[in-house]
Length: 321
Ligand code: UFG
Image 1 (cartoon, rainbow, N blue to C red):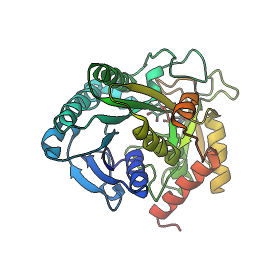
Image 2: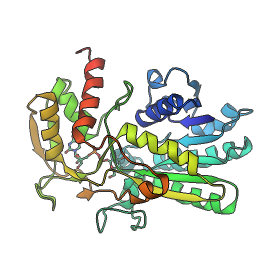
Image 3: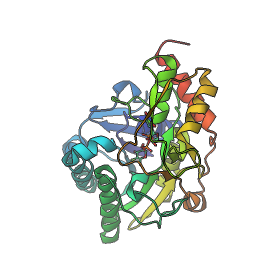
């Protein structure tokens, strides 16, 4: 089949595009390269440089069997400082993309949503029926799109799935995390280990968790990408379904850093800093619905494998191996 991947030059999107190609599908990547990298677009994919806002003109006359929509602004701190950007890029951009897709007759969409829609959870693990109370504009923008998709599906022919990612880590087929600036724990710790930055900070040691640092549910980017492939298969016209994607196991910041030291053999220089605004203490997924309904099963649940795969790609990029 023939699929469109918006944001396919980004970290997760490039792995989704790679996995689709490996399964024998045709892939077109649409990306404005504002944060993505052209060299991450896999060989064999067609590339269209465009904002999702301009997808109508960029995709006129093309045919796709489905779309994976990952193009978005995705920095929590930036969203607090510049909420308008998140509304414009994530909400308005998706609205315009949906219009363009309707015009070219595409009715099947997988959307990249986030655990940030749940805000500070009342109970963990978090299932899809948990209250959605985002605590930052990034989470609010993704929730607005989830709701938009549900309404569109109910009103017509669109079939959609929202995949709510927990903390994505690891690398696949030479594609690892490369944000600028980087804000995520695993790549920051690995950059410190390889000497690209001087140590790192632990944000907050007084959370109500066993060691006082935040607990997160880490999922390998290849397992995450595979969920998109199975989701494309189960979408039904007129229906919208939400799935949480995580491993169901929580690791504290200190545990992640210990695993990074173990994998890299480097002792990290750590600064104890205050809490980072907007960080919930514990985010752990219940991905039971995805297991039950999609038959999706993570095959790389070990933190060490995620860190090891990301470490290998970073070393290659830095010319160390
Ligand atoms: N952390 C540090 N030091 C750092 C970077 C991160 O201590 O240098 C801590 C954070 O405070 C947090 C944990 O490591 O407690 C994980 O932080 P990340 O930035 O790696 O990931 P987040 O949990 O903040 O972000 C993820 C997704 C977001 C999503 C968010 C929902 O990447 O897209 O979960 O809260 F919005």
